[in-house]
Image 1 (cartoon, rainbow, N blue to C red):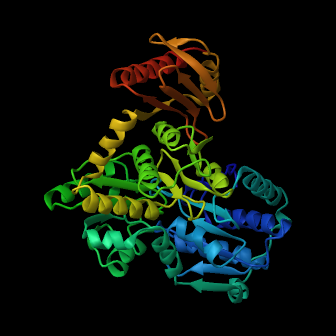
Image 2: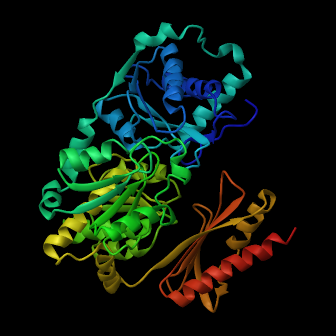
Image 3: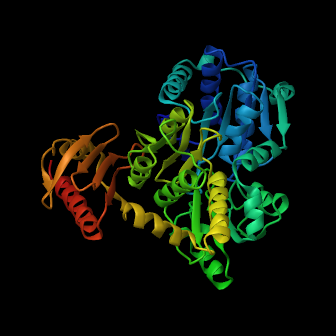
Length: 488
């Protein structure tokens, strides 16, 4: 393996048949197995799930053979499953962890491997560092790699799992399914050819008997020629169908169903930032989850509309670095109403400490049902407008800028030294550096500048309370970074 493997915020991803090969998947799995054995997590077993990407089930089986050769019991899915289901199975079967074969919303040529520890959430930095250390050990000591001469020797250690009904039962305890059934919603769903293609329609049609139309709920390793990412641009076909056929709501999940997308009755795409704030507002105002005993967790890149809602309802707010692993760690401490990140991941109180796009979609169905029954059929975007009327409008956007790798640290460092400077005559009050550089301005606007860990990009997050100043901030950050790129 010539390329160094680095576990990012959600495992390791690479190009199939280039670096993502059977051999390398086995090698990484051996490193995970060594972590499990060294830390006393060998006896209960590991669940292995996989998505609908090319050869994912074969990569999953290779991972199963590798762990089985180390004496670890394997429970492997008989079909593709969402990442949140893989995480849930760790808790349901009381296992030592899970491996998920997925590249989530990445392009079709990618696949990936993610390790989920015994607590059912993303692996923290200390865990991934140990796995990377083990990987280096095996790469430098080839004789120590466990032998896999005859795969049949390890079949007795592998159990196939096909029943995921307990996951659905867990959802039904969190979601007000009776309210949803009572509202008689007309729903359109896009599962984007991904791992949610079976279970999400089952939940809506078979379990809840809802009126649904499902798009793209079969396996296509090329995802219909688009990214399996439920962004506004990728949901245009669903939006068109929704408007032509008068659906009440359109919901979507990404390739491994850990992220969500939403088009409301009026054909309006609602960003993850606003969805997280909307769900928080619903849980506090309609379900009475509020007060100092509770917490809300968001990343540094997520909207401060959440902060305003927490302030009104006297809820403690925790800000974390980017990556759901940080949110998940806080959720393990309990009493977290909602944890969310602007890229489309969330979970709530009583659920797994892992992002779950199916849960998010179900919550949005519940809110729309609540509005149908209690607010004269108001749409989700109208509900969001009501929230804006109470807390003010928040304009936000992420801007990705290509920057040569050698200049990235220089650019980030520049913004660390802007304390007490101004942007269009608005003073920078505070600079936070827990993840990149976050500039907090005195008018409650903010900028976040982060270097990508996997691409030659600077990611810039911009939020402001007024549209004109929001545009000023965007122009400032783009112009400044372009100027800084010319230096050195």
